[in-house]
Image 1: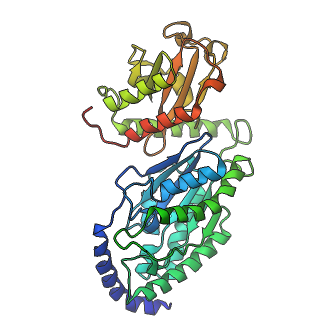
Image 2: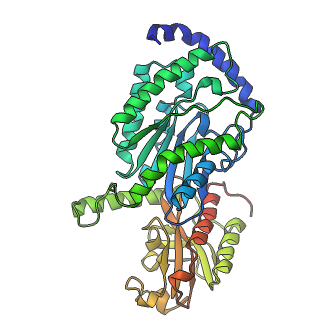
Length: 418
C-alpha cells in the first residue's frame, strides 16, 4: 500500500476502528495476576509482551488465555517447569512497549514473545515507521536479555479474524497487516536471536466471547512448536550466557560493579514493596504454616533480605523476627534462581560455622526457594528447616517452588486486612 494511500485513508480507518472497538466492552477478559506457570523443576522463564492475542479476550483468567496455555504446552514438550510473565494492554504499540519494559529485568528470561502490530495495522502505520519502531524494540531486547535468550515475533493476525472488525473496511486493514508482517519477517531473518512465527488464526466462532480457551490452546501449540527446541538447546549449553563465569574473561572490578548495581536494584525493589516491618498477615502466615506441615519440619519462614538483616514477614517454629544477614541461609538462596537444598549444614563448608547451626534453632536441614518482586529482583526466600539432616532425594523441589510462587503472587496483591 502506497504511503499516500495510507495517509488519505487513515482518518476514515480511525473512525471505523473506534466504532468497532466500542463493541468490545462487553467481552470477557482476565482480571487475575498477569502470570502463569506449569509445575516442574529447572523452570524456563518466558515474557509475553504485546496486545491483541496477548490480552486474553474471551476468558476470565490468564490460566485459560495465552500465558497459561503456553506454559502447559511448553512444559509438556520440555519436561521442565515454565514461568510466564505477561506485559500486555489493548492499546500497546511497538513504541509504547519500550516504555512498558522500563522496570522489567529482561536478563532473567529464557525467551521473549512479542505480540504486536494489530494497532499499527489498524492505524495504517507505514512500513518505514513500523520498521523503525520494531527495530528499536528488538535492539533493546537483544541488548538487555541474556545471550541465550530467544526472541519470537508472532505475526499480526488477519484483521478479519477479529470478530468486532467486520466489513466494509477490513480488507484495507488486512492489506496493512500483510505489509507490516513482511517487514517483521525480514527484520527477524537478520537478527541473530529472533524468529518470526507466522500467525493466521481462524475467524471467531463465538461472537459473544471473541476467543475461547480452545483458541488459546491452538495458538500455544503453534508457539511452543517454534520455541521448545531453542529452549532445550539453551539448557544443553549450545547458547552462551550474558555473563562469563567467574575468572573467565571478566575483570574483577567489572564483576564488583555489576554486583553492586544488582544489589542496589534488589534493595530498591524491597523498599518499593513497602512490606518491611509491617504487621503479620494471615495470607502469608497460612502459606508458611502450610510449607512447614507439608515438609514436616520444625520451622518455616518467609524472609526478606534488607540491607544487613533478614526480616521475617511470616514464620513458624522460630521466635526471632529478624537475623543478621551474615548468618542468613536465605541470603545465599537469593544468589541463585532455583532451590537451595542443604542436606546437613554441619558438613557444608558454607554453613558449618554458622551460629544458627551450633545454636538455636540448630539448623541441619534447610530447603529454600527465592521469592521475586513483581519486577523480577530476588528479594527474599520461602524456606523450611529442621534440626535433623535430610537427604536431597526426600525433598520435593517442585512442591517447594509451587509454595514459593504462591507467596510471590501475594506480593502482587495490595496489602489488605488479614
